[in-house]
Length: 132
Image (cartoon, rainbow, N blue to C red; front, side, top):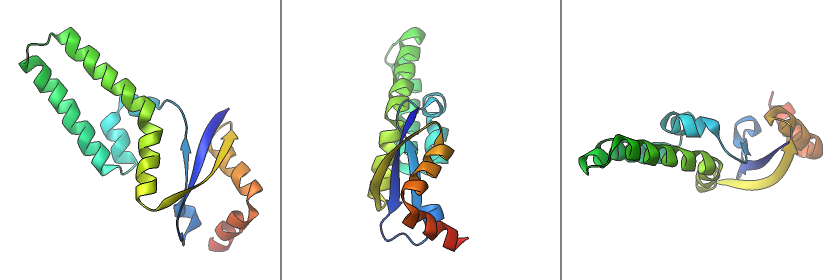
């Protein structure tokens, strides 16, 4: 079972776009493709910071005399940290963009989490059904 946090834009007008489910735990996508993961989620500041750090490690560490092994270890450690904090970074930027934390849902996958959340909150489900 996975844990999802539910976020809704304050004064959301379109529940289809203004309700976001964020999975807790390690993100393999953020680990393997940090820069692209941030771009996919429209986390432009995080994407820019990740790109600058990746470039700094790629060029800076060898310039400081670090071996290829050390450079690889540092880059892998950065990717691991990115994978572990991906959900927290996403939640931070959602809050900054005006989303409120609504609930926590435990489910098998995101589709099940959405179904469970809307089953327990029929007022939100009515908004979505009225919108379609």
